[in-house]
Amino acid sequence: MADSQDPFRQGLAMAARVGVELAVTIVVGALLGYGLDRWFSTRPWLMLVGMVLGTIAGFRNLYRMIRPPVSNSKKGNDGKPT
Amino acid sequence: MGNPLEHFELHTLIPLRLFGLDISINQAVVMMWVVCAAVVLFFWVATRGSRLVPTRLQSVAEVGVEFLRGMIMENMGEAGMKLFPFIATLFFFILFSNLLGLVPGAYTITSQVMVNACLAFAVFLLSVIMGIVLHGTHYLSVFVPPGTPWWLTPIMIPVEIISQLARPVTLAVRLFANMTAGHTVMNVVLGLVLLGGVTLGWLPLGFTLALYLLELLVAFIQAYVFTVLATVYIGAAIRLH
Image (tube, rainbow over all chains, first blue to last red; front, side):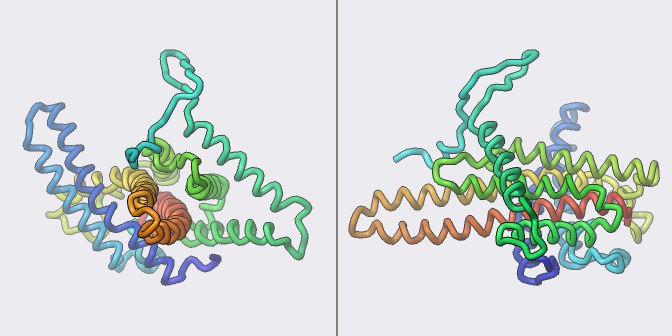
């Protein structure tokens, strides 16, 4: 257990993460938009915008997870979103 | 046959109110006490009269602590070692909750999304506080990742805000979903044993055993994932890009 770079465990951890991460990010975006909609009473536009932005954020996090940006990889946190 | 979600319901054991808040004692609260006691007991027994040549239990505890130390050094650096007690508490609390929840009849507190949400919110709050204390207003640059073209900034800022806010939610939901789903599936398959009767009942029974072993693995993985992401998130706030 001492070696946290074990590829098997890294793979398991990643598999345990990706699905929920993508789904939750979209829902958080949509909920944020929904909340702002109620505040500004602009239903349903901000919710739709939030959903699109949440989808972008979710896919970008996914992309980061599998392929870390070059500027971050030298700090040694490969494979994890920052 | 009973509802497979029934055993996730909370029942008040001792009704209690404080300043209009409902702080009744239910199974989850009792189970949390049991988990805390179990963690303390485990480390007390493991480190009692610690030797140079460790006993079996002591070496298990040492491997766990050493593993957490490595995780913190890797994701948060030397500065993160100050947070070792917090991270270790988080890991062992979640791990023992998951494992003790697998004892038949025991309540799995990590299947309550609010319990996980409190833990995740503590991590989120800590990362924001660390970021602001260490970097001041410069911390706001997390919303504009390096290498963003200027014309993308108006999109990247809301996208970053959403992904920052999604972090505690994903932490909480992942743990909750994994624990709830695993226990529900086990419950349903166990229900099939009764349906199958003597002739076919052994098949789902074997499945339940396999699922139980899988759940043991999931208990470890989910505790590991929660803790490793907590260190990554706090580490990102400490390092700031």
